[in-house]
Length: 317
Image 1 (cartoon, helix red, strand yellow):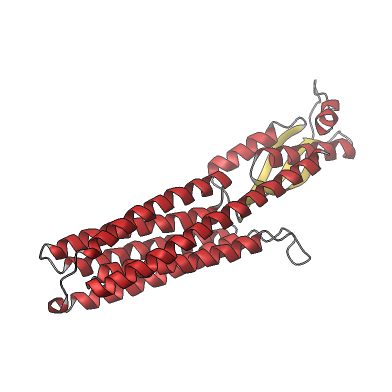
Image 2 (cartoon, helix red, strand yellow; image 1 turned 60 degrees about the vertical axis):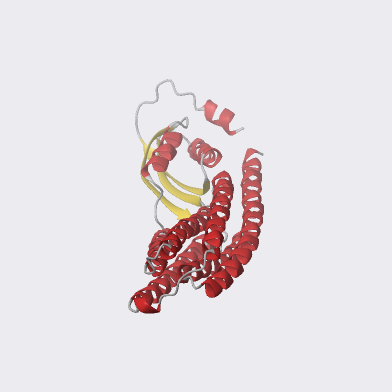
């Protein structure tokens, strides 16, 4: 009965992540549609290369949002004959695509800005309306970042965290663009393409970071030491578990798959040993963000003193 309750809790958690991801991403889609059109159009007519670059950055956000929506839908699918552990790694794949988009867009920005800086005489005087648009974009993107990060933290979704920090990179780039426009209006025309180049560097660096993290997760990266130690403590606190070894973990989307050898008194019956392993597995599932625990029972011989193995069955019930 309690095992079914755990399964229900996982389903509820997955459902909450799905709903939160869909809502926050659609908010981001609407905001980025507005920002992309406003920044690119204003940048063209005001002569600001930095504002156009920032608008293209917002466009990459829009593409990323649709990638997140698709991955969020796919990762919610139940396990099937080809995917016994479910489809949670769609989130890792989405983060990899997000990073790739950012990296390519950032390189394009750098290329454009450098070419423009080679011909400083061709840099136009920027109209002041570009500054107001850049400042408005800065405020909107910062508010969007705070909203998306709050949602991502609440549902513990690495995919949503990546998308939220994508929005923060937009806010940072808008600040740089605003400074570049101020410099241009003050007579330092070169500052506008310099701002575009800085934006390109920010975007490229963030894209590389997302790609690197996602690749490591797709290659079965283990959890951090703190999380691993917490799982160890939970296992060792289980009545009947004398010790553990060969604890291995790997990430599966936002969840973790655990493989561990449990050292259990070899004088016990197979049934009691099995019950101890079931209890240890359940303790980890109930107390950590874990998808599955594979336990291996290894006999451990020593004198039994004072351990009431009947308590194992009581915990199990």
